[in-house]
Length: 327
Image (cartoon, rainbow, N blue to C red):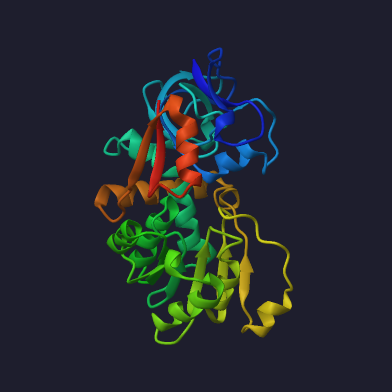
């Protein structure tokens, strides 16, 4: 099979197309022919060595495809089934092994490209809006990177739950996409001379002088201070990523002084640890896609061989919505 390997820790140029032996499913595993693989920031962190990984390794963990083989003790799936996944290592490949216990059954009405775009970013948006800070009618949320893959889905979910969204973006095109997703106010942070000093005032001005109930921040270092300053008393900062870099240690007394604030650093794995919760979130998402409540924007598609270009585009903030590798 063809696959994309990261040969060593580094930039996108360390990604190479190679040929490897076809994998053989072991007990409890599905052998899946990949239709599309999701490209995510976590892939770039692993490629760059931010998250420890062995090298070389086949990159990617998310995708969708068709089951072509079954390991022992697999009873819930059959060859020909359409499945998606968020945590199967080596997904930038023509074939991948997916644990049956973590595979998501894709409804016939949902295309495999859309299915590949949902598991990681869709379930992330779901747990953020439904569980970490369960949005209530009338709540106001600040969503950073509102035109990104998580941002567009999260905005739609917040609005569907009766909340209102203030979104940050970096271009006019992204501002339009954030509004189409339901954001009631959009702030262009590329137009700010000092994001930390200026953003909180603009957020409050968009909200009648009040801070927001929750900030969903997947950007990290560049936005953290402005996020804290944008919250109302007893508001919550949900830091779920660090696309601009990791947030350095900070004095917890800042939370006290700013109004008894909350900060949490969640990760998807803890919100889909049980099979029942994994099924609940995926069924909910696929159902919303089918009934039109949720629109999945695939902003860029690259052939498998162009994985390096896909990583460069993602890290260069050149993309909107979901980035896919078509296999």
